[in-house]
Length: 142
Image (cartoon, rainbow, N blue to C red; front, top):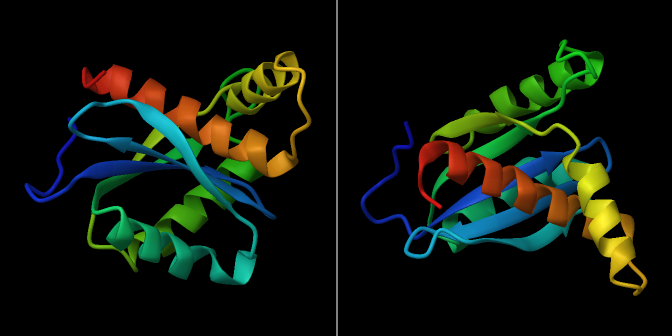
């Protein structure tokens, strides 16, 4: 069940990778997820996310959890869980986990269908949007 601070204005979602983190935001008043940014400095990931939580008045952070094709935990699953545990030590808002199955592939397909150029960071931010949309749907928010 989604719980946020009464003063929260948004929820952030993260598509966590080793080199980049896609970030999406949904305003709680409307429940529509949109790409926000892509973080590209691994040494600053935690401080950058903490800053975005404050800036966006986020009441929660959703992290997409990668799994293998059969739903099994992988090395990447463990790496993302470890990152989330480290991040939790620097945030005062709850962290939620949701399956991120095929969000990056879906994002790349959508961007390619637009017929315009795009970068890997665009894929990550759009994948984070799909992660957040799925989470909001599961919570009955959207």
